[in-house]
Structure formats: C-alpha cells, structure tokens
Length: 330
Image 1 (tube, helix red, strand yellow):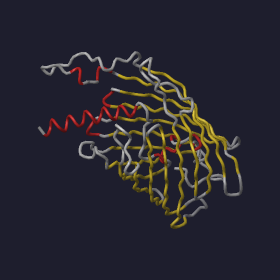
Image 2 (cartoon, helix red, strand yellow):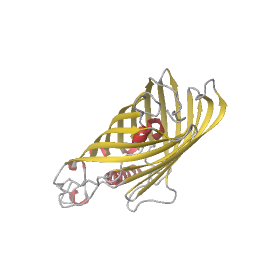
Image 3 (cartoon, helix red, strand yellow):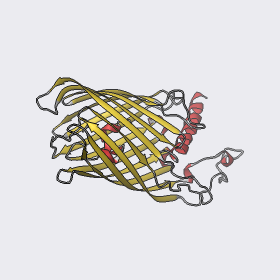
Image 4 (cartoon, one colour):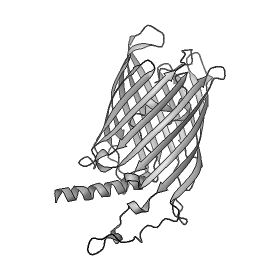
C-alpha cells in the first residue's frame, strides 16, 4: 500500500511538473557557472573564449526531467564586442514534454568611468517544443477492470510548436560588483498545442546582482587568492517567482558554495514550487573547470523527489586582463 501511494504521488507530481514546464523556462542551480545562460550581457565576460556543457537531472526519483546545455561565447577586443551561441534540450516526465532551444547572443562593452562598465546585450532564439500524449494517462482512460482506454480529455491538434523569440539585457559591472536586468520572450509567441487556445510564452524578467569580498590578495591585480562571492538572481515568469541566493567561496583552483532557490511561503496555484537548498563544489585546472551541485528539496516533494543533480564543465582560453575585466568571469 505504501509503495502504491508513493507511486501515485510520483505520477501526480510529474504531471504537475510537466504542466508548469509548459509556461516556465528551465531553472539551473549553478547559473553563474554558465552566466551567459542568465543573460546575453554575460557572454564573453572572461574576455576570451569559453565553451561549456551542463547536464541537470531534475527530481531523480520521479523521472522529473533532464536538461542538457552546450554553448560557446567569445570576446573580441578590437570591437569591444562579444558573440555567443548555445543550445538547450529539456525533457520532462520521461519524454512526455520536451523542448529544444537555440540562441545567438551579442553584447557591446562601454567604459563609463575608470572602473565602471556597461554592457547592453541582445539574444535571438528559436525553440521547438513537442508533446507525446501517448505517455499520458487521464482519469477517463482507466476502465472498470483497470485497462487503459483512449482519452477524450486531451487531444492536441499539433504535437509540436516551432517559434522564434528574442531578449534584451543590460549589465553594469565593476571589479567587485555587478548588477543588471534581462527581459526575455519579448515576442510573446503562442505555444499551445491546441488551435483554439491562446497560451503564449510568458515574458520572463530576470534581475541579478553580485559582489565579491576579497579575503587575501594573489600575485596579480585581478587574482584574489581567497574571496567570497554573494550573488542574487530573481526571475519572474507568468505566475512564477523564483529567487536564487548563493554564497560561494573561491581559493585559487577550488570552489565551494551553498545556496537557496525558491520564494518562501509562496506556491503558484495548482503547481509545485521548486524550493531547494543547494550544495555546490568544484575545481579548475589548465583552463578547465568542473563543478557539481545537489539540490535538497524542501518543498512538498521532499519525500519522493530524490533531489536534483547538476554538473557543469567549462573550458576558458585566450583570456586577457585589461581594465574592463570584471571579477565575475568564471
């Protein structure tokens, strides 16, 4: 009985997760390891080239979903410009709902004062979203003897949706601080699988800020031997509000951190919130950085979710350290 109850809870939770995924973009536990995924203004922040891959296993005990990301961005010094491109694949509930998204990015660096810089950014994207009704089971499909019958609850006219989208961002930064804003999904495209539905991809607004506290100096002007970084990311999309608060300690080639994601005491109507405590650890050598995070779920899914795992691998090269380099160039 206990096993059956857990299975029922798991199925319901996955369906709620997939329902939310239709109107909310994916979330990452280590957004600052791949900052260009937060906003196009962050592309090329290391003032060189950066390639990265990310894999996220969401709610491992529930088959909640998978997120796979690959990207590259590059800063060009003569043009004071950065270009980037990334692709993200999201799979929810064992393939019931999936999305592939491709973005290209551009930003330009403006020196405001000796120490302060401004970066406006632009992002253009294409997304492809699919749904597989054969993997869904509704109440009207369960026959008197437990057999699965054809459903009349959900019969999508289209099993896939292809749309273009765009986003703009700004970033102000200093050697020890940054802050900015990103507005995404500004085209407001229709994303429903039903012809008569008017569901659109909600506008997504992200506000971000971070500061570094040097603990001890390294050998170079931009090399802190030890530092603590405090970063905040607020995201609002439709009925969702999400806050990421992270505290990260860096010592040369080592990083460890703890964070919180969610909005205390707030749950969107009919949805599961995604509140979690995040534990992060990582290291770097010869331009390569590898980091891992584990989400300890503190929402109503805590007993069945199994937590979430995320791994990020980056490679940085051709880096330079002129005056317009920010501390935040991981």
